Length: 292
Image 1 (cartoon, helix red, strand yellow):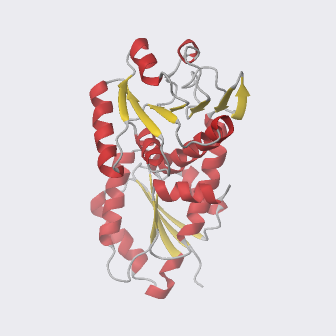
Image 2: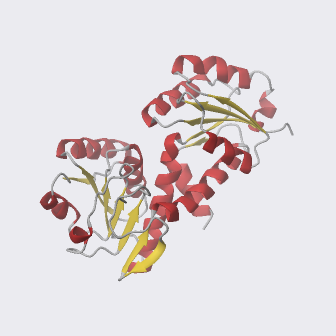
Image 3: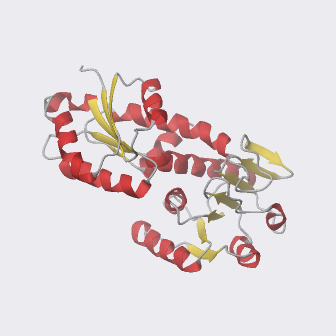
């Protein structure tokens, strides 16, 4: 078997050191790292990976698409997959800004919390704050894709953006979440009233759910993906991992991050089991569930 090679395509000027270290720790033998990659440069880079090994050895080569700009990363992913033809293809992991591995880990925390508090996430109501962002959209998409009946609400400061996200999610999942606005306290209270689980997927240093608001409706589970002060959900510590805080089970960003890292490493290893895998959010969630 040929030594494993990972072609790391990053949209940022310098390719992510974090992603490179995780690849090494996952057992990748060689990493070819490229920063500032544009879609028009993808074909030649990928062809270099495809045509140096015969089809039988291509499962030892894989592509990782990363960078801090998820939208730009999605354009690279599209360019990568369009380069493949016939047997000349390799497996691809898309995780720009950790969007897929983080979303999968957040949903696993929600499932665990709902199971502990309610017996199952089936029948639960989950509100996602900052649901119009890359991670929030993926969290909502994964929740809508779960077996059973999970009621999903998607929140944004602007109602029209929440509505547009809800419509997009309906197109991709066949299920329509309930949009709500979060610009003022009363809108926020109405949007999350009666929710069993709240997941905050906002930007670093932005508080989305003050303690006095959540105390007015007492959710069963809180998952916060922001570790930078102020945290996204007041009262949740970044290190929380299923901690019982007065009858509310809480997960902080670092608590979720441990699961995210396990998924990331396992996903990289999965790339080299075949030459035709495409690992996106749903596949990351399946990998995470296999680790339980």
